[in-house]
Amino acid sequence: MVEHLPYSRGCFVCGVENTNGFGMRFHAEADAVHAEFTPGQQHAGYPGLLHGGGIAAILDESMFWAATHGTGRMHVSVDLSVRYRSKVLVGEMYRVEARLVLARGRVCRTEAKLLDAAGAVCATATG
View 1 (spheres, helix red, strand yellow):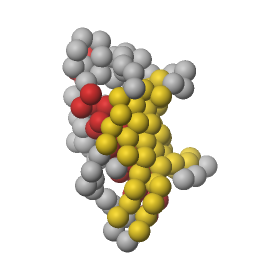
View 2 (view 1 turned 180 degrees about the horizontal axis):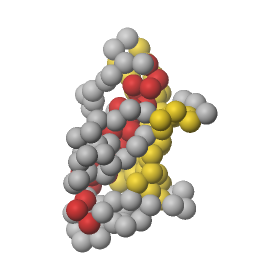
View 3 (view 1 turned 45 degrees about the vertical axis):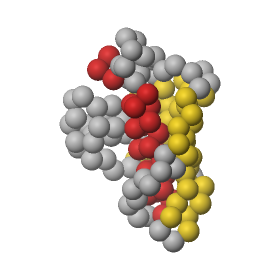
View 4 (view 1 turned 90 degrees about the vertical axis):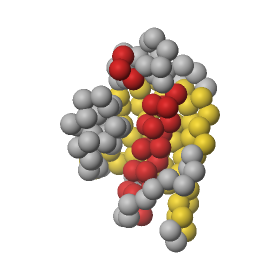
């Protein structure tokens, strides 16, 4: 069963009222969260390519939702490690997936991956 997760109206990643953001809607399924998105030209760093900071923000947001969904409590990031593996093109559809790896007290460990439409991994993160 897919559960639709809440969102913040003004958030750069999931805010549906932020016209400069990604407008992503996250969903939970079993022990993971996921969302699909298509970056626009306003998200580009180099023409036609999603800015690396945008990639990091998407991975960070997905890991936030994985931790929040997995524990039932809101969380904030204390560290973020991103590995960029291939370019992410503006105008193409992508999917982000994240899961909670460890929850101990107030500390969680999460991981995420950004996939292209063919399922190839474009970036990974832990936090």
